[in-house]
Length: 384
Image 1 (tube, rainbow, N blue to C red):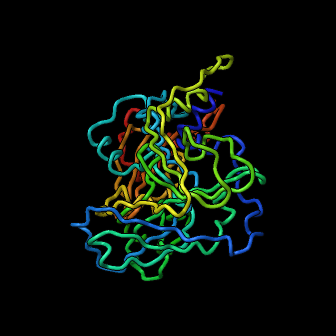
Image 2 (image 1 turned 135 degrees about the horizontal axis):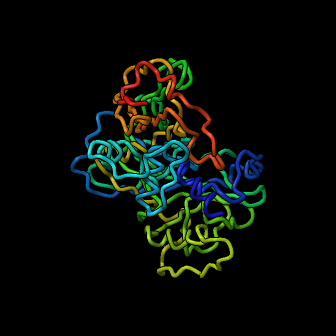
Image 3 (image 1 turned 90 degrees about the vertical axis):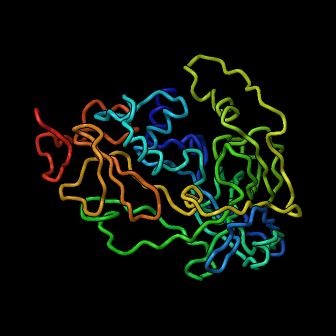
């Protein structure tokens, strides 16, 4: 179990959140309920407001969350940051030596928060009066529908969904929070040969829930029995969830999270001890209490909320030269590439020989291009 989890952590750091019996895509039980059971969410804006000078209309909106994972390169180094043993996979050296200053700078700038939230689906939104950006106050956000089945996790008789409430500048004026994705590169062109332009994500000015291990409030929807798993955006010390909508307030920190997840990294046969946790890590509130959003100047970290992660498992390089990408060699057989024009963070990780990261029992490479190196390959392969 331990080796399997370590492999999963490398290729999908947050796959811990998706382990156990969690599933999605089943028929939505809640859709059988009447609309009269839906409620109004109150959103309170908190200062400071000095730098809140958006150029377009501003709204608050619900953003339902999905399990997500950093791309391959970021997964390796996020795992190292969290104290996990390196498990880079066949043909990868990225986790075996300290990063050069250049690689460390790129990693810090272009990797997502490994414990941050991942967007799945934009929900309802409401306009924010301009005067509230300068003085604060409460906005009422009607919840006109139940969350879609694709954002609910658990068994058919016990599941839940989490959402963050986002303060955003509606750049395209469509009254909906716009989510985008990183630009990638695959054989045949960007993102599997798609040449269409990706949407520009809306600009984020604050959110109630950004990362698991920072104090936050999240909107929760629960139906059926209690969901026993601790692995979907983990919490600790929470009372039982009520049915329907509620607000979950968490003050979980990294050390608390590691204590909760410690049993998953024990050797077979070891008996886990109950974790020692601080009191008051979690509280549940009804919707008559406002969910709070701190107004903040836009930043690359906030923009992660409206960017899907790049699906990249550390792959073989394309045969034709990737255009518009900035490439940096890791070793003679490895490089990373970024697209500086992409509004969403990502790092592509290519290797001349290897297997997809996290693939278990990979004793022989799935690809080996060392005798057929692409002409554009910029890394020094002399002596091979």
